[in-house]
Image (cartoon, rainbow, N blue to C red; front, side, top):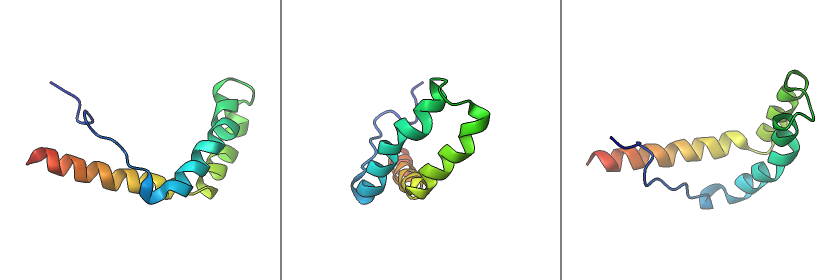
Length: 76
């Protein structure tokens, strides 16, 4: 059995600016929590807000759209 994601590649072109913004904030928003510089309980909400302000939801929505199209194509 293989993973449903095998062969899927996310094309960031439709959300290039938003994706770049989210990736740039990753080190500031998430890595500080991940590596223990900021406690999870104190930093999580602020990190999510920063990522959402950078259009994380739009990136996730585009990812989901592409992934669902990929799955539909795989079923053919």
